[in-house]
Image (cartoon, rainbow, N blue to C red):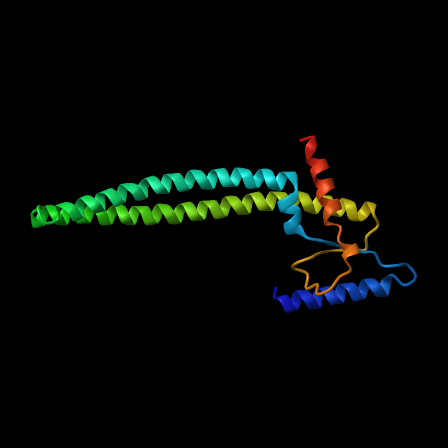
Length: 175
């Protein structure tokens, strides 16, 4: 959905809530999900695990890159001494190694993107449950995501992100 569509939907939703909340005061909250993901214990744990995986992948790629550099150096150093056939064979071997490295790099990048999305999705799903529960218990009429709701201005007292982080961390302590 486009940003304008989201903004229009938000305005319509808020307008309809205001209309139905006739005598009652409308209670609205704002949550910064990105901040909640980054500052929650589960988010920090996921970030640490993900960084370890990134470091491992980078080490593997660095080792392959170093092998290729040695092969290229050997090829450059011996190119004048080798016969045309031997030089072509070494050059072909280097090109295949380079192609394999590029494929390995792209595969690693895709795997890391999938892993990051998987970790984020799990945390977001759990945060959503905590937000729903918090909204019910605190009698909120509407809780909006701070950065993607088309929200252009808000009173900072509406931001309930810190409360959500605390509740989320508490909900994960027993698990």
